[in-house]
Length: 71
Image 1: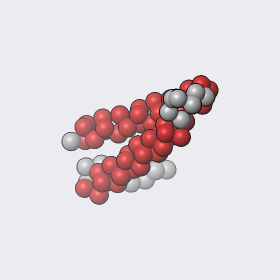
Image 2: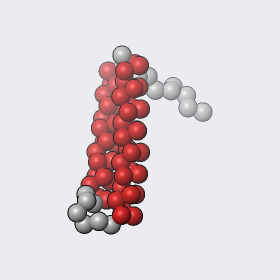
Image 3: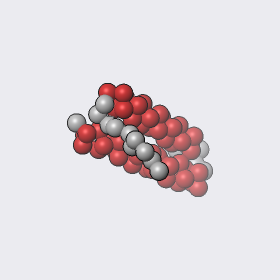
Image 4: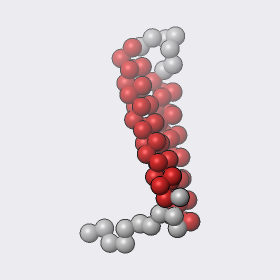
């Protein structure tokens, strides 16, 4: 269960990075017929929110345990 949760989180992070670069290329391209930069940035925010919800659910269910002493 922990391995699959970590794989899901890594995939979400990869989707965030991919959408960030797609927004960069959309900004540099500036073609009105193609999707705008805000679409890709919005998807990045959506994947970030999903990642946060997944992390909170995994912490609440006890699948992931936080570091008890981060120092």
